[in-house]
Image 1 (cartoon, rainbow, N blue to C red):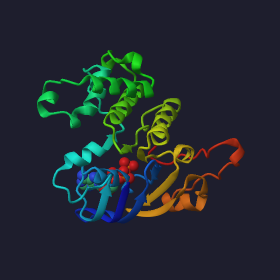
Image 2: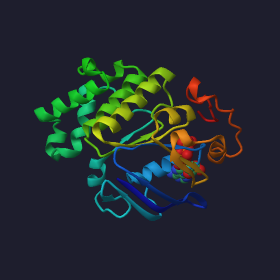
Image 3: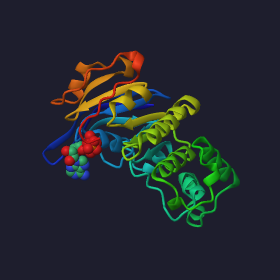
Image 4: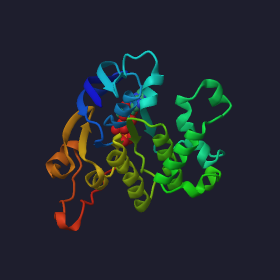
Length: 262
Ligand SMILES: Nc1ncnc2c1ncn2[C@@H]1O[C@H](COP(=O)(O)OP(=O)(O)OP(=O)(O)O)[C@@H](O)[C@H]1O
């Protein structure tokens, strides 16, 4: 579903991605860990062409994300979820979710905000997935931050993407809401076969929700493996210069480690 080969990106003299090689299959939930500045957001942004990579190859849902001249095809297949949900506050919850359909309706219909019945039905199904169908007609700015992030997920699902890229989607949420949001994303992989690539700062969430963890440090991949296999030594490579706490025994749940910039 996602194929990355020797991907590079440089800002001036700052080499941010130094040759990333990565293959991600359909329906995987991949968490990207790394300290601040490691290149996590840049990698995700290269995947949907918010950032133009300098070199290498990147194919996502069958689209050449570096060389394609029309990003519309790419954006139809790849939905993005940001830390600050990026919903339109004055619109209703339903209309925000329907904006996920804009890429598949005509320009005139999108300007006039004319949506087909099937799009409205799909948007309502997506709201049901994040348990917000009862809020459909409310103005979005009447919702809590966590609910707005759930609207962002419903909008991403309404796009019917093959891939969802989530850039620190739970950074500003309380632990209970954060786990709910990650649960919805994991359900999208399990029940809809969507591939999710999610940047996180919380190691414990990565272990709990990720099928697989990719660790970046200074623009290089320093770990790629299943979440349960990640050791303290791996964590030290991902977070160089930071001392992880010893992992608790597996019987008392996921490791409670927090790193700088959480
Ligand atoms: N538009 C830009 N112009 C110049 N430098 C940039 C730009 N975007 C990112 N960078 C630099 O690229 C490096 C990697 O940034 P990136 O946002 O990808 O890291 P990150 O791992 O996502 O960090 P964080 O966890 O803090 O979000 C940083 O040194 C950052 O300053």
